[in-house]
Image 1 (cartoon, rainbow, N blue to C red):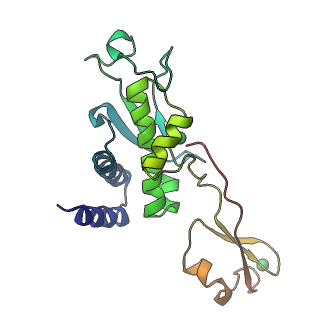
Image 2: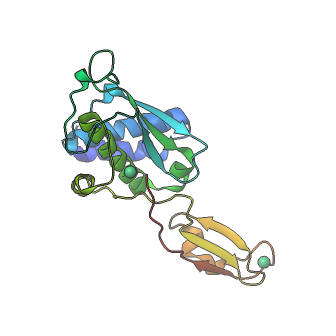
Length: 205
Ligand SMILES: [Zn+2]
Ligand SMILES: [Zn+2]
C-alpha cells in the first residue's frame, strides 16, 4: 500500500473512532506506521495501551516503572536490571490516552501527540528513563512532534455573551461556531457573542 493510501485510511479510521477500543486500535496503528516511517526503534510488543477518562490536563502520558541509575543518552542493558521483563528485555510501559483530549483534538493535533509519546517510549526502552531534554527535543523535531503537548483543558476559543459576559461555549479548535460566531446569539440573553482566543499554554505530556 502506498504512503498516501495508508495515510487516508488512518485519517478515515480516526474520524470513525467511537469507543475506547477503537481509539487504542487507531493510536496503535498510527504509531506502528509512524515508527517505520521515522525509523524509530520501538518494540510494540512491550507497549500496552489504555484510555483514561479521568486525566484532567495531560492529553497522553507514558507510564513506566522507575529504573534507578539511568540517564537519557546512556543505553541500558536490561538483562542486568531487576526491572527487566521475564525475557530480559525492556519491561512493558503503558501509553495512557485521554479520552477527553481525543474528543477535543483534531487529527493533526492527536497524531502529533502520539509522536511525542513515541519519543518517550523509544527513550524509555533504550535508556530506561525519559525526559524533555535536548535529545528529546532533537528527536521530536525530526518527527515533527511538539516538545510540549498542549493542555487540552485550556480552551482554544472562548465564546462569551456580550450582554451578561457568561461563557457560552468553549471550543478547542476552529469550527463553524468559531468561524461564524457573529451569526449566533447566546441562549442566556439572546445577545451577540464575542470570541476570545486565550494564550496557548504549554504542558508536560
Ligand atoms: Zn447572557
Ligand atoms: Zn512528554
